[in-house]
Image: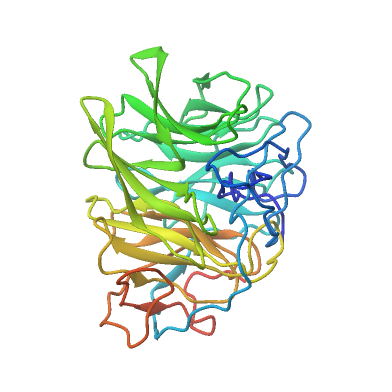
Length: 397
């Protein structure tokens, strides 16, 4: 299993602990980013984070770190009831390397993703959701990750370290007109478009505070940037000025939880915690196309899965108000980086086929579970498992 994945667990995640470990994972051991910045997310004394296979990324150009979980107790997973889902499809299958960071255009017919299929460092590719041909959009010697389509489907915004450290870039889907949107010494990753296509939200690691921050850039005034709060991995609602993100809690085990904030006349208001757990990190959230539901990854400290990710991580769905949680996957390996397609399917990165590739599943909402789900509060529903023994249409292995 390759060790490059996404950014901030890389893909994917962060935590506010003593030694922060920014895992800009993208599928290959050849690039990693790490450093040791003191965290200042709370007044309590930071304590060392335990390793769950999230190795710090090390690169010659950047020095930063982010830990996925922070400290955590040695707790067993909470049992739950499930029933199998068979509507699972595999959309990419590279003979070498890894495919990760999926993104869909507004029509739901075109898939973009980062991949190390042709080089040690990731590039951006696009393909039709149901097709086999893959088109390479970027071919820079640096690492290009975390693409997202503009609302009109003509551009991609992504994170790249081609200028020396990770910044936000934009490019046409034809691979032309690469434009650098940010240029600071701080790592800036995970861009997301506003519904009107005029603004981009992204996260930046402040080297002084050691905290991840949410910033917005207005493409009509590219020299103007606005700080809107603390957090990482933002996703803009497709139907309004609401931003979804993950944030480390500032007490207890300091796991990541899922939050939203609203922009009222451009100003951030009403930060709201949607989902949290005392035993798992909730990371990488994304809205459904109508903005009414949220899918996210629940990663548990069950050991090293290889390649810089935990051995167990699954997807959950919850209403935007935090009600009616449903577990979407239960399988061997890791499932993460979910996005919601116009066809109602959830697309995600998974190691279920033996290497990182892009899969999708159609959510099946179910009856209330007879056992509590692993979360605080009133989560009382579980739903679907992707049994590792089910037939897997589209699997090319």
